[in-house]
Length: 127
Image (tube, rainbow, N blue to C red; front, side, top):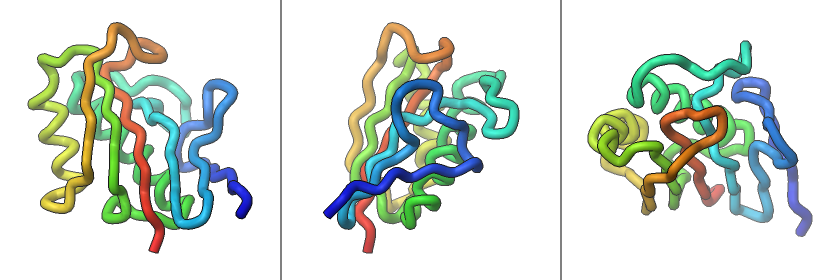
């Protein structure tokens, strides 16, 4: 079983030595998605909710490119620049998963790439 590199132009290109996602067997592992506009490559301006919406759209695009949907996600790791944004982030996050939310870790970090406010990575199981 070989690993397959997943890439889509509907999500920003990798800004370092990594891939948007890797599929191996029925598992799909995404890299952390930050709020970069996939066309311009620029950081989406605005508060944590505006940035979270772009992050989740980028994540959804990568999952779709790998043959998965948000319903297939079993685990996410979320990184916030400021834990006081937790409730606002959750509003956006929940709108993408509804009652079918995966297991999750959410941590505050000192700094994220390009000084964004939020980053999310996911693991999905393909059916």
